Image 1 (cartoon, rainbow, N blue to C red):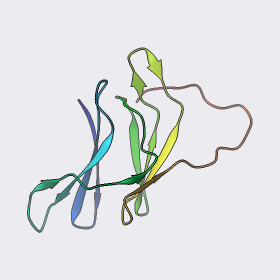
Image 2 (image 1 turned 180 degrees about the horizontal axis):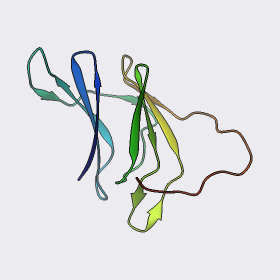
Image 3 (image 1 turned 45 degrees about the horizontal axis):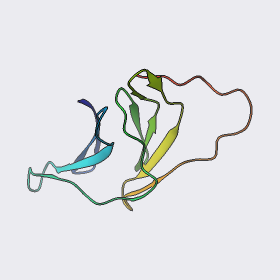
Length: 102
């Protein structure tokens, strides 16, 4: 299991990836309950993958790349943490970087 974590306010967001599972955020309220929860999300979530990268930008987590077996993705997904909504940004046309893993 590959994990990427990012802290936001009183929470720690854990973005996990598995070859056979799916990528979903896990939330830990560090200063309140110290318990893991699995919040519902809406929108188009990233596909099953491992070895992705996740970067905190404001109150959103940007997830890029990753892989499934020997196939590597070049996709970008954004999780808006307050609304728990996944989206895919429009990528400008032109030469794109090749799919990769972290």
